[in-house]
Image (cartoon, rainbow, N blue to C red):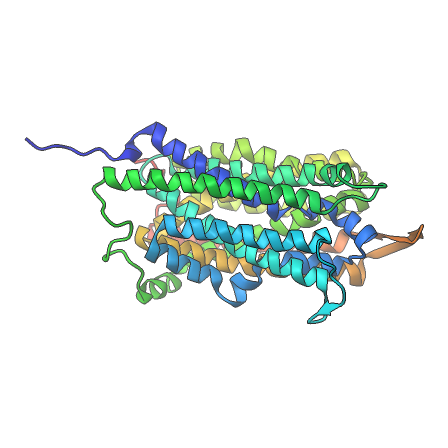
Length: 460
């Protein structure tokens, strides 16, 4: 009599529990990603930052990933060592990077003078954000591979959508709560910039503990499938895997669409609270609550669109539609005459729809183009391309604001308050949507030629 061994991933409770645990770890990382974004006006007023300083700090997210190829090495480690080793390492890296950011803004250590031409505070904090960027990006590709591991042939796009939605709760918390937390723990009406960062450090430790718990679930999954080693000799990384990936036209179209789309969203969120203050007249104390609405929209819509892709297909069409919406939203943000905060709320909500469309279809489409054993390297290479935009766009916007967009500077009680015109930055963001439309059209045509199945359902 033949005994049929059932995989643990066939248990709905087990695979959704695994998803919940790793999603929480990513949520803690997404909080730190945006923790200082709503604090830009306070950083300028009370710590003497310029928009260029703010741009350098946020640009540092991609320094090590881009110039030292840390993301690509992370993908190679993921394919060679597996999700457990890589995920633990990524979590510890996030904690280390955030600890340096806390030191930079907490005044625990006096940070005077400059380092390599940067203010010491900016240099230390940027170093920390760069290290954190390595950790959170490697964690991202690790979690993507984990989801493929548990959900291949099942509700994969829905699972990826739910993971992204959960992670963006961290974004919403950072955007909405950072300023109130800083003010609550401040003294004499001077906000405590370090308080929301300390909260994030605590959350990251909790996320690390959660991932340790996940590793036991991962071992049980492999035991249920009769797998002795997480990475078999047959599936281990080979240099030829990289060559296969980078010679695949479909891969490059996905990667370019990714960098263009995300360059129009993530860097925008760094500046969105400041946009609300300068263009729409929103009080800095609550300005972050408006861009915080964006992630809440994705919480519902990303899983919805992912489920649609799972059951009905049309992945390439979904990505094209999202790119069109990105162009429309930023074009309206760029129109100077449209300056009522209600309009800003509507546009942010619409951007939430946009932010749900493309990722819900893009990430589950990668396994249709690249074999599973090369997914770690493929996701890493896509994230590496994406990091060029995440590094360059904040730097560009900060420089443009200081160079061309200052319309007023006033000094009150020794504190300088700067007012900006965000028209040119928003035109730059809109251009990412226009270019993303072309990439989506090319991808749709390539899918038709190669038969990747991007328009077909994931559930067969």
